[in-house]
Image (cartoon, rainbow, N blue to C red; front, side):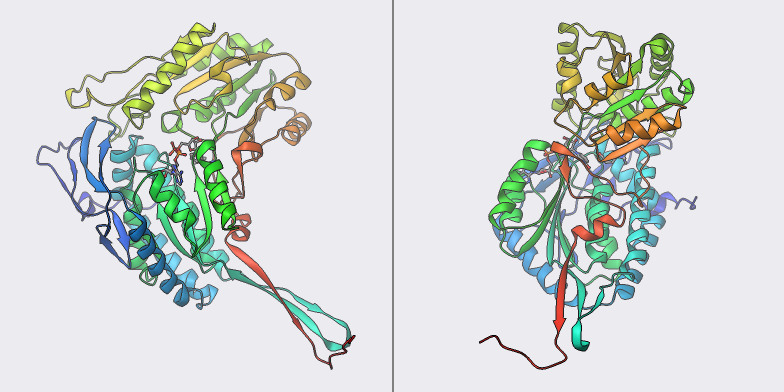
Length: 517
Ligand SMILES: NC(=O)c1ccc[n+]([C@@H]2O[C@H](COP(=O)([O-])OP(=O)(O)OC[C@H]3O[C@@H](n4cnc5c(N)ncnc54)[C@H](O)[C@@H]3O)[C@@H](O)[C@H]2O)c1
Ligand SMILES: C[N+](C)(C)CCCC=O
C-alpha cells in the first residue's frame, strides 16, 4: 500500500467551509473553479448555455454551479485536441509510456485528495473511493506498459517484395461517462486512448463533474501536450455535439442502453467506431455444493458496492433449493449489518445514492416488487442517519427480496440500487435457461466446488465478464465489456488497444510493375 498524503494536499481548487470536524469533511466542500478544461487549463465555456447545480449526496447540499457547454465550446475543444494529437501521435510508445507512468505516480500521491472528492460528489464510501483511485492509477501503469509494445507485422511476398502493418492512432476520441465511477471510468477510457497516441475529449455525467478535471490537471502536470486531454461539461446536447463533430474519430460511451442506442445512431452517420459499455441485469448462480460463506460474501460483493449502482452487479441471485434457506438467512443477517451513513467516515461501507430522484426510483422498484408478490426480507426503506447534517442525504437500507419470480419487474429491469433478488432453482439446465433469458449480457457468476460444472456453466452464460467463485473484482489486465444489449467493444486488458487504434497495411514492391493493360 502506498502512504497516504496528508490532508494539506486537499483540493487546490476549492474551499472547505470552516465547520469541518476532525472526523469527516462531509458538509464542508464548496466548488469555486471552472470545470471545463481546455488547452491545459481550467476555463469557463465560451458559450455556457445554462448553469447546473452539483450536489453532495451525503447531505443533499449544493456544492456549487457549473456551466453546460454548447457547440462552440465543443468545437474549440476539438480544435485544441487536434493540435495536441499532431504532437503526441508522433511520439514513440516509450515516450508516451513515461508520461503515463508519471501521471500514475501523481494519482498515487494525490490518492486521498481524489478519493475524498469522489466521495463528496458521488456519495460512495471513502473506503471504496480509495479502491477506485487505486484501480485508476493501475490502469495508467498497465497501458504505460503496453504503449512501448505497440508494433506491426512484417510479411514476406514473392520476388523479395514485402508488406508491413502499422498500428496507428485514430485521432480525437470522445469519452462519455456515467456517474457511478467518475474518476475510474475516465481512466479506463483515457489510458488506452493516450497510450495508442490519440487525443481525448471527455464529458463526465453532469451529476459528477468534479474529479475528472483533477485527472486533466494531472495529465498536464505529467507532461502531455496542452489540449491532449480536454474536459467538456454538459448533458445530452453537449454529448450530441461531441458525437456529431466531423473531426471526432471515435466515441467510447459508458451509460444506459437507451443513450447507448442514440450514441450508436449518431456515430453511424459519421461511420465512427464506438465502444458501448451499457447496463446489465446479471445472474449469479449459487450451487448447493458452494462454500456457503464464500457464496454469501460473493452475493454481497455482487450487489452492494457503490450502493448497488454498478453496471455488472449480479442482482439476480439464483440459489439451488437445497441451500436456499441457509443462504438466505445468512445473506439477510450480513446485509442488516452493513454500516450505512457518512461516506467520509472510515467504518462506513454504504454511503448515499447519487440523487433524490434516483433514490425514489429505486424505492419505487421495491414498492412494485411487493405489489407483484416479492417479500422484503430486509431493508428497502429510507435511512435517516442520526447525524443532523446528513438528514437530507439520499440514504436507504440495502434490500434483499425473497419470493421472486423471473417475470417480476425487479428481476427483469436494471434497478441500479442496493436491491438483491433471490430466485430458487433446481437443475443446472434450468438455471442456465433462466439466467440467459434477458436482453442484457454484461456479467455473470457461479459458485460451486465442482470445477467441471463451473467451466461448463460460464461457457454457457451469455455474458462478457464471468466470475467463478468470486464477483466484481476488476484487475485492469482483464478485458471488460458486454454481450447482447450490454454493448460491445472492450475496456481494460490488451483488448482495449484494438479499440483505440487502426491497422494500416503497407505493400512494398521491390521489382518492376507488370501491368495487365
Ligand atoms: N458497462 C459499463 O461499464 C457501465 C459502467 C457504469 C455505468 N453503466 C450504466 O450506466 C447507467 C447509469 O449511468 P447514467 O445514468 O449516467 O447513464 P446515461 O445513459 O443517462 O448517461 C451517461 C452519459 O451519457 C450522457 N448522455 C445522455 N444523453 C446523451 C445523448 N443523447 N448523447 C450523448 N450523450 C448523452 C450523459 O450526460 C452521461 O454523461 C446504467 O445503465 C449502468 O448500468 C455501465
Ligand atoms: C469496478 N467494478 C466494481 C467492477 C465496476 C466496474 C464499472 C461498472 O459500473
